[in-house]
Image 1: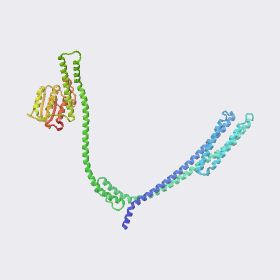
Image 2: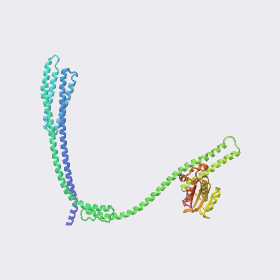
Image 3: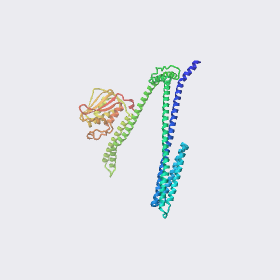
Image 4: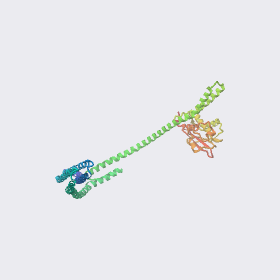
Length: 530
């Protein structure tokens, strides 16, 4: 039973320390706030008192100025006559009464703030007000003397008012009021300084007490909380760096020790789950990477397919314009005017037929290229001897080309019509754009078999070799040497090679000229066969 009570006491110890420190900090915070509020309120009180004194002082000065200006106005009226019919005097009297009302309002505010000790200022203000009203009455009496009366008596009365009433009585009352306001300002400033000194002493005493209590609280905090907590944080950092196998090892039965023991148990579980999640994450990253690559490939293929479609439409529109124009022109010539002879109609039909045949070949080539790019080229595969096919094709073209090969037979599974078409295109290019000597080489390659057509012509630039397989592209000397080409020969050659799973490219021939190479596999890829 005693052990249980002792354990509960030890468990509550950290909480008590923290609560005690918190209460002390709260008391100091409340005390500091109270001192600050009290100091601020007193400072505001003194500032407002000084402000009211300055306002009263300014109003007294303005009252004095307006009063002397009124008296001067009366004197001027007696000397040169009342030119404005008393309007100036009336305006000054209104201002004077406004000044008196403003001063009375300021004194009222001071009475509310300070107390009845400011009532003397009200009495002095009443005397000043009565004196001003009395002087105004006397001036009006003097100023109202008619022209027929003795002017000498008016001047003597005016001098008496100026000497006795204004210079002695009125001025002394105004000076007394101003002096009282200045004395009030000085008294308020002295009280403010005394208050500031008191507040400073209280702040210093409060700060010293706070430092002592804070040091004692920090000592208790370090012994009861900071030390065990630092050991706990060291273990947590080890866990964060992945060292779950190293326990915190914090002994004791307080709250921090219990947390450390729970963390040690959790670390074992986390280590096991982390290992499992790491393995799963590696597999997931592989799957995501694979899927991402596949999506990127599909996107590129889609973009390329769309670009090819647009380019195909542009190319077809461009290239079909000329033969269709020929067919239309020949038809219009045949139908225009009077009847023509059968020979004339026959010639027109022949030209239209040739243009239509050219158009058909052009469309077939473009269709095959497009199907190849979309992976839907149709091939009629046969098992043939490539050596015999190449030799037969060379004889059909009558280009004077020579066949060089070290093989008697080269059996491949290809579409013979398409392979012959590609070889004829290479031979025609060599004859029209190359030199007089054409050599066809047939050899083995890592893919299967290689057909190379070389000529001794002027060759091609690097840019021309890069663009030679673009549809409707013609080299720099194509228009000069052969004007009937459409620029589809090499694109068809590449499409046929790729449809069989091979490839085609151009190289520079050693010694000058161009080397066109086609690699064909022994058996084409299945996706290229329809």
